[in-house]
Amino acid sequence: MRVRLDLAYDGAGFAGWAAQPGLRTVEGELSRALGRVLRVPAPRVVVAGRTDAGVSARGQVVHVDVPVAAWEALPGRAVGRADAPAPAASLLRRLAGALPEDVVARGARPAPEGFDARFGALRRRYAYRVVDDPAARDPLRRREVLVVRRRLDEAAMARAVAPLLGEHDWLPFCRPREGASTVRTLLRLGWSRRDDGVLVADVEADAFCHHMVRSLVGASLAVGEGRRDEGWPARVLAAGVRDPAVAVVPAHGLVLEEVVYPPDGELAAQARRARVHRGTPGARPGAADGRVEP
Image 1 (cartoon, rainbow, N blue to C red):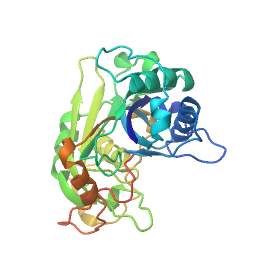
Image 2: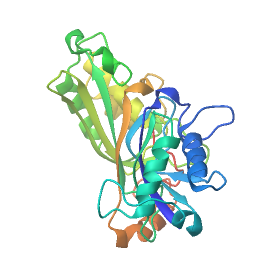
Image 3: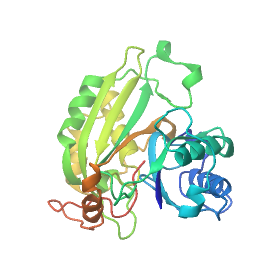
C-alpha cells in the first residue's frame, strides 16, 4: 500500500535530499528510519522535490510503498486526534523516535488512489529570506537568512522580476541536466518586507530546474543593490543562454514551504501529464526530470 508522509527538515546538516554513499542525506535518514519502524528493509521513498545541500523544508511531501502486513502490524491506538487511523498515528509516533532531531514527520496517512508525490504535484512554493539591515539581524536565525551588506530596493526588485512570470525556457537561470527539460511555468515571484525587516522572495512554479530559485534571487539582488537595471533579468531570460553574471545565492536562505496537489479524483491524470517530457515553450512539460530546486 502507498503511504503519504509530510516532512519538515533543517537542511544545514545534510548533503541534500538524495541518498549518496558516505554522505548524510534526508532520504537516507528517512529510509533507514522507516525500515526500523516497519521492520522491513529500508524502503525507497519518492519525494516531491529533491532539495540540494543546505536547503530546508517545511512542506516536503514523499510517498513510500509498504507491505500491507507491515502497515497493519503497527501497534497502538490513535494519538493526538480521535479520528486519526491507528496505524498512521503509530507510524508518526515511532518515526519521532527513529528520526534525527533535524527531520520531523508531520503527517502520515494512506495515500489516495493515483497519488504520486513527485509527478502528482501541481505546483511547489519556495521562500528565500534576506536581511539587509543590521538592526533586523537575528543571531538565532542566522542559518536560515542571507545577510547582505547593502540596503536593497525591494520595489525595484519586484518590478524587475514581474515580467518573468509565465512559461519559459529557464536555461539562463538553471544548471541543466543532460536530457532534462528546462521549460517551466513560473506562477508567482514577488518580494515583500516583513514587519521585522526581513525581505522574503515568494516563488511558486509547476516545478523548478536546478538552481532556478537561487539564480532568480541572485538576479533580484543585483537589481536591488543597484548593480543592474530593472530590465536586466528579462534580458537575461530572453537571451536564452546561461549568463555567468547571474549569481547563485547560498542555499541556507531557501525553504520549500508547500507542495500543492489536485483533488483526489484528478491525481492520476495529473501524474500522467507530468510524465510527458517536452522541451519547447507552448507544450506543458511537467516535471519529468524530477528536479524540483533549489
